[in-house]
Image 1 (cartoon, helix red, strand yellow):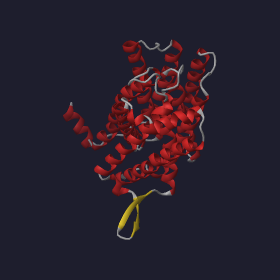
Image 2 (cartoon, one colour):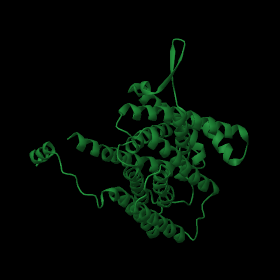
Image 3 (cartoon, one colour):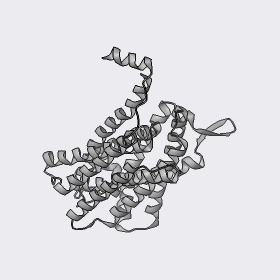
Image 4 (cartoon, helix red, strand yellow):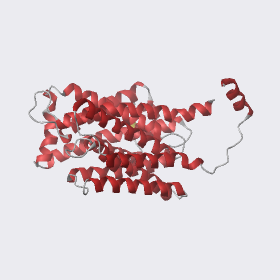
Length: 350
């Protein structure tokens, strides 16, 4: 029964992850495409980013403090005081998480870039990274990973051809590349240090990663604001200073809290004891399906553009790749004989 609960754990987290994506994507898209709160123009992704990360960081810090996870981190003693500190590995993972934290909120705010299209572009990257990490770790990349990679490439080709080319803003391209890099760094460290049966190891990794990610993300954004006065950086500056007095502040607070919940749920899925070829597709599929549901909800409820046939074909191929990666490890594997007590449990349950 314990084994069964362990198997169902990631599925429960994935369902919760899917459900929190729907309101987050929908609200972010609406704020970025229509004026609200007495504003003359919609909020840009860059304007939303600073306060979203501030409130997400505060929410995450409160969760880690209240549940006592911070005690699992490595500590540095300074006189009578003790401070949690990251290791070199978790600091690298924190850098990867920083890139993800800053790119995911931006991805749903670009004008003319539909939700299914950006989902195919950004969620397909993890399906490419997962087998790459396996290869770098010196393990065998199985046939189903190659087939899944082909499906992802087909999905990208179909959706890009339908648009007549990539044709996305330069900031959108940068967002995709940085998200891919962030996912690679995070998954490498996670696989090496935290994917094991020790719950303390899981807590330690997550606390140390998060204590790097949020401060570093805000420091980078603050440094960019001080570095210049381009239109993009002025939007970012207004997000740090002007949004505090906006009527939209309560919405941004809620979005920040949702980002923290997403981060916690994603970590619970990815840090599961199952192999990356199961955990990564499970996490990606939840966000892809959540994005599609949000896109159709916006079409029905607010008259946003309906997802195109080519976009849905691309999403369908992506989901096929996800399913293949999930079931691939069990294909051709002989089932192990169940222990007698497990058979008795199943018979009793039936």
